[in-house]
Picture 1 (tube, helix red, strand yellow):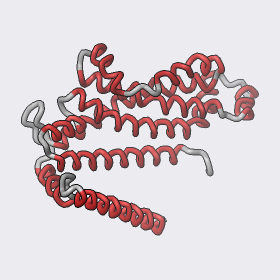
Picture 2 (picture 1 turned 90 degrees about the horizontal axis):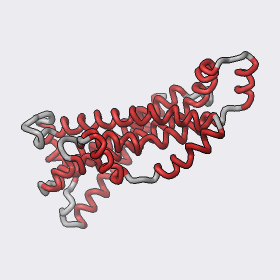
Picture 3 (picture 1 turned 45 degrees about the horizontal axis):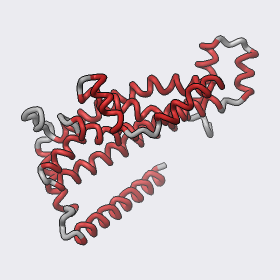
Picture 4 (picture 1 turned 90 degrees about the vertical axis):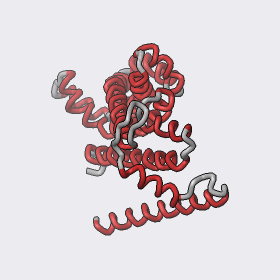
Length: 258
């Protein structure tokens, strides 16, 4: 286990070295129009001196912006999951549910989050609510699809056990459907949280106020490419942490190989 962890860390450090090397090369080719890793690191250290300062609505530290975004992401993600999991179970458990709901999924799934934003503003009269709305509506589809697949692939033997023991609907759901479909549900949730984290940047660029997306846009207006690169790296790092966290949950609840 220790050896495996050491190898994983070594590969990660090697990957980061390649990324920094390519970044430095691009900076040289563009004659520093794209800031170098060194200059970006300098700005990063400056931002970390006081990451949680608050000097007004549009002047907050990068820490405040980041945690505001994370809060919106999880709110939208949880709302989407509350809709997605029951919807996926209904689609996977009955042919009627699949026939009725699958066309809706296929029509709405490709719609860009930017197209939903005006409807969110109209419905909630608030840019923050609109951002949470577009996160919820665009991130729920992977969970719907994976949940439906997990439920629909339950072996007939499992279903027969429920019938043989006279399981009630609730007992069948909690003893057979959810345990079997849980690894697929977590796969969907893992994909959905990734989409939610991508969408937040676009949403906050449109909504303004506070958030990591707004920080990127504000940095562009202030002509600070170093700050933009810092934000990009932080967005990528948080996305990696979220993915690893949901991957750990997926492995924890997976019955495969146990």
